Length: 136
Image (cartoon, rainbow, N blue to C red; front, side):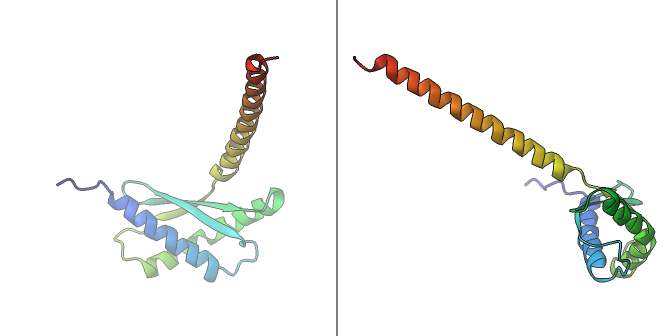
């Protein structure tokens, strides 16, 4: 009977993800921190540092202000996590911008374009094949 390999760091990261999302939604009063989605948490193997990946629909200066607000709130978020989680060592919380969303959108756009180009080529190939096989 094989046991799935699901490390403790992964379990704790999942719990931190849920708690940080709740804290950001319900507890943070900083007006700069709004419309933020926690997409992932990567925890170091020793559970000392939590890299919290967030995404926002804002761009430019507004996005920079959100991350400044998140940086200022990291101590509060860590203290709130301490109240909610029973861990021997509470990890330092470092907020990072999740760039996988826009990158994934661009990849999907390129795949759609490739699919349309291929579809157009197949249609042209099919039409020329019909012209060659149709008796005159």
